Length: 442
Ligand code: SAM
Ligand code: F3S
Image 1 (cartoon, rainbow, N blue to C red):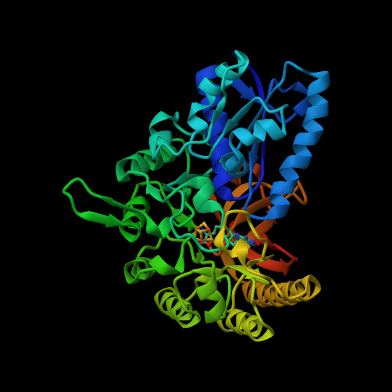
Image 2: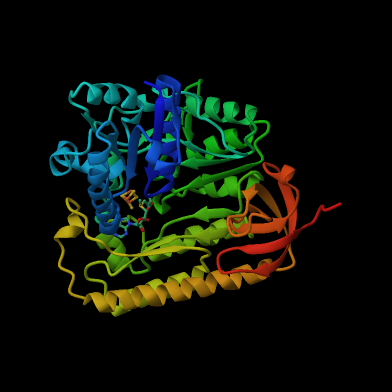
């Protein structure tokens, strides 16, 4: 079945990665080409997120509009994947009969088969968790540019009391060591210079080497960084519970490791952290950061915060603000707690008025923005190594790339710099990016 596929992606980087794999498998097995024009699609895929209520609501309003579209184009197949699909399964087709196929994050490699079944009006719902079969069945990933994501594990077994991910993506399963190394070597052969190792908790990754020696995430990082042609390695997301001394040591010794770690803290109050079932205290979190900064002084730390968790008092919230200030986070994310059906926290009463919770969030966001701006200021007049990704979104006359600390830097330079590392002297601060001059300009 040739034809065109339009894929719309919501949510996290794992979903971005999964959407790219969907594109690859459809092209490889069915000869389908991707399109960015909805009107010419024969297959419409929605890759969804259910981590917060708003994200889930978006999916259903999108499906409502697609129902009308399908009336005028009954030949178009509509598929829903990702976490909403996983959560709803068969019920999704009852609620939205315009949907022809439903697949989960762990069954996207079965898409060609599901499409065939949908065409024959058969059962086209598969949201099972067939362990790591996905990676054995996917074609080699296509490459766009010099930076690529590599999924190293699926699912999450932490069961934080507020989070749907363990239910929608299944338990933690590590991808085998050989399969990861093979993929990175293949990417390098096709021009990739930077990889981001992906997973809900990358540092929970475990496997063993050929001689039976146990391998942890720190060892994997060393092997990936040693591959010829790999110049920079990132990873996301890591969890404080498995942020071991061997991982910290890797930051001191492996120069390919980017000077940036995203380490979600969620709250600075031990009472709230316990209720969230995060498995660490604020002091333990700060101790990881202290050791990490001692190992790699220039490392920049970003984080995720949840504000307004049930039972969070003014004092708990103050502790979060204080922790944020002490750590000096850069470019972080903060969210209002959103009760998710089926999670233990959804059963808890939330006595704090919504207005108060929103005010706390606004306060924290302002503080985090100010901290980020302070850090950006320290970059002025320094030279940063930028991996040039492509034309800047803001000004197509300029190029954009990321520095080791994950900041976006725009500068003027010839197009053939795309895909290479270039020194850029920072001259200007913008709200969420920096501007600079190409330091190797002839
Ligand atoms: N694996 C990561 C970790 O170690 O925490 C995070 C995965 S989650 C998809 C991304 C972020 O969404 C979390 O760090 C958390 O801040 C936020 N999040 C998850 N569930 C949430 C909820 N019910 N309400 C608000 N934010 C939530
Ligand atoms: Fe969610 Fe906690 Fe895992 S936030 S993805 S259950 S580490």
